Image: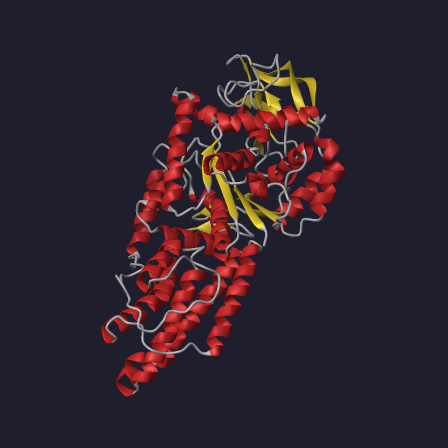
Amino acid sequence: MANIFIGGAWPYANGSLHLGRLASLLPGDVLARYYRAKGQKVLYVSGSDCHGTPVAVQAIQEGVAPSDIADRYHQEFVDCFHQLGFTYDLYTRTDQSFHHQVVQELFLSLLENDHLYRQTNQQTYCETDQRFLPDRYVEGNCPVCGSRARGDQCDACSTLLDPADLSDKTCKLCGNPPVERPTEHFYLALSKFQEALTAYASEAREWGDNAIQLTRRYLEEGLQDRAATRDLTWGVAVPIEGYEDKKIYVWVEAVSGYLSASKQWAAETGGDWRSFWQEGNEKITAYYVHGKDNIPFHTLIWPAILMGVGGLQLPDRIISSEYMTLEGKKFSTSRNWAVWVPDILSRYQPDSIRYFLIANGPEKRDTDFSWREFIYSHNGELLGAFGNFVNRTLAFIDKSYGGAVPEGQLEEEWLGEIAKLYRESGDLIEKGHLKEALERIFAFVRGANKFFDEQKPWAQLKENREACSYTLHTCVQLIANLANLLQPFIPFSCEQIRGFLGLEHPGWDVITVPAGRKIENLTLLFERIDTSRIEVETSRLEQQKKQLPHHP
């Protein structure tokens, strides 16, 4: 079995997470939980992106140091991921000396291997603020689609840009038109990797369609060399004499966090980072999980850096979600049109949030979050289907059998169905088709409810107690296996079930619960959410627009 590396995208530590961003991160935890249940070695890492323009801009707006902004939101992210049950082996941050050292080592390795070169170019300079402007500080019109865009990338058409490409440029800080001034920087010779990256991308059978199409487009247009350093005061220092006033560009530095986090995990735990990065006796499968706006950085730029350094595992599987809208409109942090993760966690169960974002998430196409759908999803599927099956089975046993699992035997037909569900849902999870895997498991839940209804144990109890025992014994086995099958998706309720039934850690194979085992501490998995909450939450959302956003 292969060792599994999972790199989750690094959220910018400049404001609270919203559900759209969370939807792109959650698949990483589902994968990690699944592979651990299978018994494979997993290294799942991520962290807060504490450098870069968004953090610096927020600090300027608030009149504080960038580190103050990073500290605030990094801790908030840690708290949110903990409440949501994320199982990172390490969640770190980029403004640590360990990360800086690894990034500088990669930079020097690229330089030594002749993949970096010096060049003097005109760079955007703001005479009002008296500073060279990072690409994200420059806004203008995209030369490809005409939309308003940042100086590094157009969100509307996904074109990678340089500030010089934009027309009608303005400084994000003061709103005045900037000028051009000469400055010397190191450039990554990305064009030299055109052939190698084309061959690499052509073999990418385990990427999302959006990643395949977008990467193909960049390659067909021809890769351009990109500046690897910038005139900044906040970031990783360039380890070259004479470049003390410059920093390594965040698009090089942030993706390098996957390797630095792996090495930091090894240093802190005594683990072997090489077993997840350098193929030897053990095979490696490397997953990268992020939103579609990050595709080129994971399918072209990070692979080019890894090729340039040599000897490190390239990304194998790209899980790149589409966008999620909110009540039919695009999430907008500037207009405060968002459902903020700390806020929704304060009122709703983490499993309800996890379930909705997988079952209705933007896995292959843009999807919408609405409070109506969220609440009906919880009531109809989590409570009405899954929670109802678990509760009515175990409550019946508690009342009529003294809380002891009745005698019985799981029939071969059921055993075959369960084994097939493990195989098929597992295969779908491995391919990143999480929504379809969850749908199949819930089709099984509905089948289990149908079995309970058809057997009528309440009638069997009076007419044929042995038949009733067989029915309930069967239902307990289905519940125990559902606690395995659903734990990657809704871990908290599955943990409760394991507590009820005295089960060990989750696995990925058919399990049985022996007759006579006592059901302990039985409680409801889910409570009904009153549908009046729909109007309350939508009104709250409209009111929120009139307040200051959590995020710049």
